[in-house]
Length: 348
Image (cartoon, rainbow, N blue to C red; front, side, top):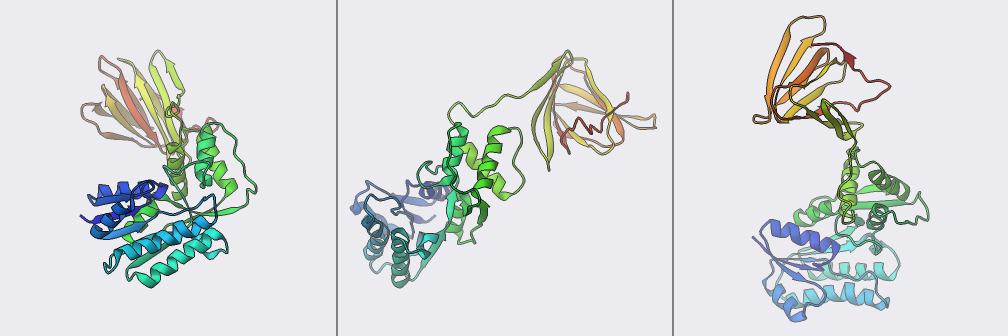
């Protein structure tokens, strides 16, 4: 367990870093606006490592850039005095640019390099993820927040390319000094992906690493009362069949509810294959290979969960042999297509 000081602990990156450090059982000292300088002195006298995230990015007076970014860095180094502890600082790719913000970040970097033997400096691109403030300085946070609420968004040029990093990857990089994973994506593509999450909630975005992280970010901006969405239940006297989610590359998951003494199925597939998992009730799954007479049976129960593979070329059914509803979760390797159903009726 280490004693760790995090400046800017209430900010976007700071909140996520503090949570990660506490999960590691580190003792964390938090310094942010409103905390007196005397506390900063005390924390620096105890800390084994300093994560310096505090900074100014939207001041009323441009002079505050230098005071908040360079000045606080200088103060931390001076307060440490002869204590040589690692200082990890988050800078910005704008340190390469000739603007007030970039100059202040560059000055802080240079001062730290010259005065701290164990300095680690990270020039971060645009960082996205949970807890970033929308309509502030994160386009992705603003897009997610507004699209989730059907509010308008503004894009000047859809072809503008952004370099972005996900908050969890940033936190891992800061703690473990690992190489940061970055993504390059256009504004137009970002907006299109987020709109698809809003439009088709049943389609899980598993196409790539950025997709999974962007979808997780979008969900974190859902409004209160917007965490759930209805599904289409296909019901009849036999029970119900409801698709839960589907993806082009990972197939689909459905929930099959079967009434007592009812049998469903009696069909087979050429290529489509499925996995059945009974989570409640008692039943029996029967197979028969096409052009064969032998019937194979598997008794299934929610009291002893197990996966039953439904292979191609076998007609199959599932019967509820209990007195209550049987609930079966089904994974299929491909999304059902009415044009190419690959499903042929034949009694087991």
